[in-house]
Amino acid sequence: MRKSRTLNLGTGSFVLLGFAALFFLTTQTTSRGLSWFGPPHYELIAKFDNIGDLKIGAPVSMSGVEIGRVDKIDFDSNEYKAVVSLRLNARYDKIPTDSDASIYTQGLLGGKFIGLTAGGADTYLQDKGQIDFTQSAFVLENLIGQVLANFTKSKADEQTPTDAKAPAATDTKAKATEKTK
Amino acid sequence: MFKELWESFTDALEALGSVVHFLFRLLVNTPRALLRFSLISQQIFNSGAFSLVIIMLSGLFVGMVLGIQGFELLQRFGSEEALGSAAAIGLVKELGPVVTALLFAGRAGTALASELGLMRATDQISAMEMMAVDPILRVVVPRFLGGVISMPLLAAIFSVIGIFGAQLVGVQFMGVDSGSFWSQMRAAVGLSDITEGIVKSMVFGVACSLIAVYQGYYATPTAEGVGRATTRTVVTSAVVILFLDYLITAAFL
Image (cartoon, rainbow over all chains, first blue to last red; front, side, top):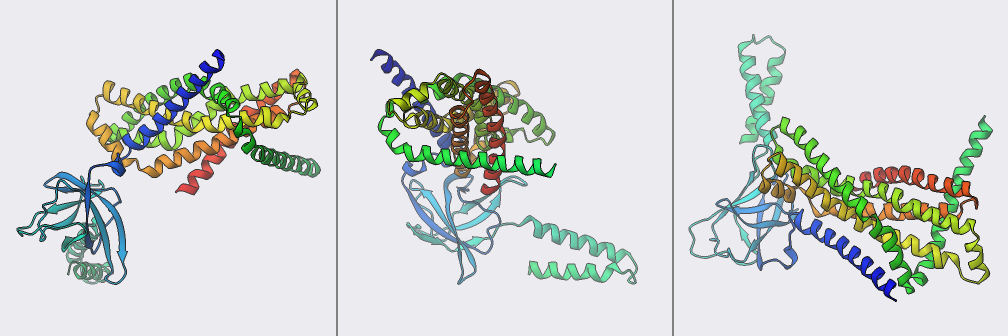
């Protein structure tokens, strides 16, 4: 009897330790934290033309302070827009209705996050409300494309017009300007 | 020459078939074995709790090595702060489950195989059959389940200790900022990474325990046969673990 008691005690503490480790992994090493029994929250929706590589769980910040996270990303096939659901801490419930949401990049090559800028309206966004003013993600590839196009264009100008590269270069330039429009 | 190749191929197929058959027998007996949980609990203690020391020590050193190597590498790109995420992802997804399974095969798998092999060699298994006690139900299934339950827990413990090992080297010795170590880790590790690690260690748990009890149960009942069964347990487990690791990683990508 004594022996089986120490044995069960050992097994029990081993299993407990294992589950404590699992708990630590899921709550402390991921960004999820204790979100399912976390602080009270409410939801806002914002529609973007292009969200770049914004991920679920990305932070939502206002003046640099994290006030929530991206909860869900959907595609609206009627408007051809990305629908992003934001899950905000209920403490920050005074966001004016004319606030705008933009997608920024952390550092040069870091992940994307959503920054909210407060508007001046007296009414505040309610749960399930929509942020109307949005600004798409800044896509690095587009910018590189434009820089390259400009670069090849200025090179082409230096060379004689008989150069075979010149028409191709102006072509890309035309495309790039089209995009910026 | 071709005939020999063909024969070894059919032998391998036959072995695979009998392992699958054995697994099926174990699974059929599992519900009844669960009724006597004290037997399983004892085996969790034997293969899980006794492996704890080796798992924790190895986890600590693997984490410390990751910390020092990762720091050296990341420093070249001036991004030492990413050490936390690199170490955590490496440990949770890959090193935790795989190294734990390899150590488990060496520590607990060999013990299972030689124990069962000796039982077979000393006719204990035949004696049980004579007494109308099903040796599969009474002896094999509890050992199998003990291993299956222990493995994910051991892998989780390994990963946690490893992360603290990396933190020890990176933050305490090398001077990475503690805040960015943890916050970068939290930003980079997703719940899917943890799930992948858990799925891996569960599959490895089944594979390792199955190979160990199979080799032990069907060992040639001589001293030499038990020795060979033990060796085969380690070799087969290692190869199967690494092969399955590749398969699961590819499936999760």
